[in-house]
Length: 281
Image 1: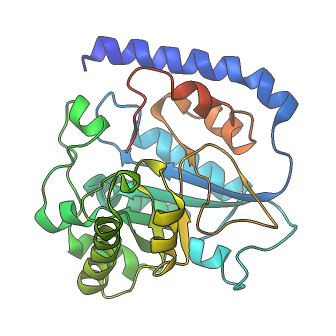
Image 2 (image 1 turned 60 degrees about the horizontal axis):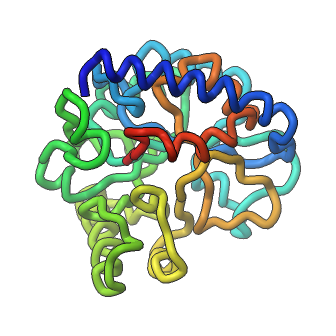
């Protein structure tokens, strides 16, 4: 995608966000809950909507540290029932796929502001060191390289980062026969345990898609699983295997980022799905 076309798309996304705000002001979710943010690339230098500039990412992390209670997914589910009732909103930061930039660019910032996070790895790419090739990565310039296993182990050793599974090949599990679903889920779990030395407890459905069959397979090995969407997970009656996440995009910058935290842009996802080039990873 050309820079000019990407600029037009980003402008369209910002206009769409402005249009969603009045709806959000009336119908936003005011219940306390767990807000799970999803990032992909940080500092890749591309025009992709899922590639966050480093300076904006740092500003976002500083804001979270100052204004919110930040938790790991492990801490969020530590009581064994899933989630605590009452209290202020909790925020969990997550990254999909396992980019080298997550280590090179985002990790130093997370250390600086003591931001816990979960990084979901598409294990074939980390294992082979093959550049990511699906979704936005195929449509934008700039090689999206995976982190190494040594980098993943270093992040875990910091005590701030947990490693989760994102299947082995990053495939849409809802389109696969059950035996292949089992293989994708279990292989990613085994590879992470072998290479990192810690059994992953958290899973991310590729493309945010799940079915009852996929969910049941994931439930055999994982404590939580995250899906697509743009909404808060209210305390009480939450579904650990179907947790909603809020995607953070380049077009959010800092101002829209704060509105997303307040649930003012929960309706964005409905409109975003109907925009050209809306597929994420």
